[in-house]
Length: 347
Ligand code: KG4
Ligand code: ZN
Picture 1 (cartoon, rainbow, N blue to C red):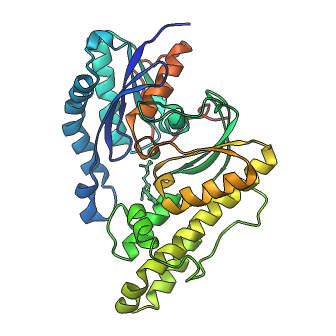
Picture 2 (picture 1 turned 90 degrees about the horizontal axis):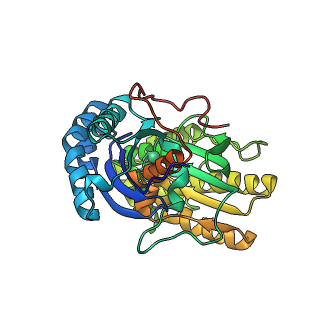
Picture 3 (picture 1 turned 30 degrees about the vertical axis):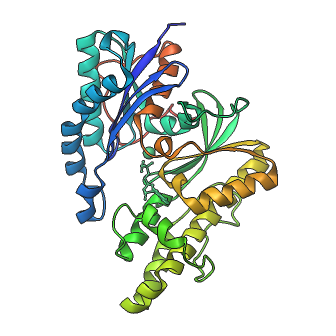
């Protein structure tokens, strides 16, 4: 088995530019990120052109910052990992071209990583304040919930990921973002809905919960979005303003109910007692508290990594990358970015 002590990782799949230095035990020596929320806010969503242009401005300064923060020099970096898919192709391209160029110029190998494998590996990162429970490992169920994805994986071992279910339409984060936009709460919306919901009644409005009775692990949030739109059309501006807290709490409750119902079904069906939540939506405070309650009731081991490892970050890409390199996997300079996962990424 090849030995790789430490890796520099790059993540630019959407609108966050992130660089990390991670060692072979998953210890995060540095994580430096630049967020573009304010740049995309006027458009109410991520504008791909704006995202890739800003990755080009932020990426190399973040590489320097990560090296400085970790007190490492290039001679101590064994390889480079980079997100190669899925994501916005223009954004991925900036990270990929930079990773290839650095690998060539420093004469070290590089590896392209699937962004979702990064989210799956996030709970296994560690730093001075966080480490996963010692007995946490595989097999486990991973709920990956972000602005672009909502999937349940059965993780048998490193590299063996079975997709048990996925959203048939909108991702959970996308539903939060669209609802926030309808209410004029700004972008990104999930965190705003979460904040508003803390003072609202989760049972104030009855939003639909799709596919709950179906015998599968899939999700659907487009009906919820349409129901919210129809309801808001019947309300005056004043009514919406007065009831914004309960509207947010009820909408959020519907999403949390769907996520936990399918996770519960998967835990029972596969008889797995380890569960992890990753992706930006796992920052949601209601989901965190209700999932912890659920795990306690069912005697499950639930791991939710710190927020900095839940949202898009390069540390998770570094851990996935170094584990692959340690198994002897490398990428060629011809590796191209892809908007979607490739056959073989998942079983
Ligand atoms: O994983 P992530 O950082 O990027 C993607 O790969 O999409 O996730 C971003 C998503 C956005 O849709 C954002 O609205 C949502 O995560 N999000 C939240 C919260 N914080 C971020 N959704 C609900 N509650 C939150 N507190
Ligand atoms: Zn993500």
